[in-house]
Length: 411
Image 1 (spheres, rainbow, N blue to C red):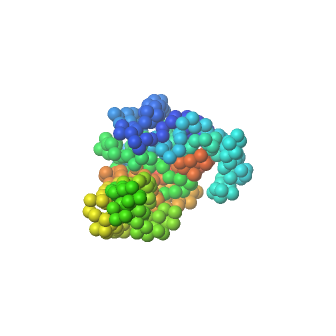
Image 2: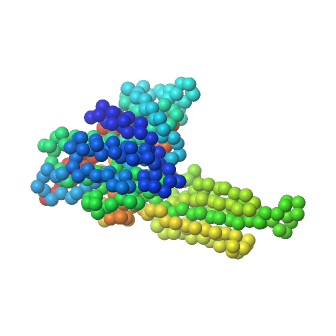
Image 3: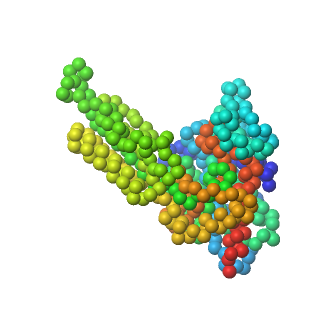
């Protein structure tokens, strides 16, 4: 299984599927179409049924039940795109056999080194087979590792018909990294009662809580006058924008928060005397605190509008997704089954909140409760990304074990 996973993953990683937030198509980039069509052919070749790809690039397939028990239909999902923050073109994965615990030279010419001095987590991977970048691109383990693990698990079950299971649905989706993954996902067509995204990080991660999320866009209009004659006339929109930022709690930013702590995050600040634009994201696990954060921004905007003029401040806040815990708690047994599957395989489950979002956040509110499972990668979205092939095997085994447990617990 290990070699099968390595080969699959490297094949997927070499396709540039970096998503584009400025594109209005779905998928947002042509590379995602390329990978989607590859996956369709591979699903057919391993013996999956009802293999489809729709007009928006969503790939779905079925592993038919081989039991007479009344087993719930469960699904497994992974996304095809890679993050827009760092290039996904010309990915050249490197394989490190029996990692010795020391520095890994990713790129000798450019002096790029993956070191345990900078990334202490590497100490956990001594003796593993690691897959790294060549230092010039991201790797794409987020989430091509998840695709490889789902595909390998399905192939394993097809090759071992003695393992009884209910109907299983799989899906590979576009544009998760730009927040659009489930936007055109057909939950009714997918036809699962519950699902799991295989999109987490290190071994054992099991997540069913995500942020409540919104974005805020502020436009501030100033008045530009020659500085030599500006007294009593000039209104500097940059300074008003700085005043807005300074009224937010300084310690409630991503660089100062962890665990269940929420934040305001200033993504961009672009301006001149005449006009300045700020773009924030707002995050909190608690719905009441989430609403309070949005109210705080409205309060600041109103105060500045009163001070400088109502026509000078425009604030637009849009909710993006909500904490999936609200939809998963009523069917908590799906988390318990994943927990049991890991325990059965000698993996210590690490149940923690997602300090971000997954497709499961939106899917859960679309009627498909969807916790998140580990895929095994580290340092996502950059040149220092890597993954353990040994832990990819364990991720595929967890998928198989979850499927077995659903059948065993059915009547």
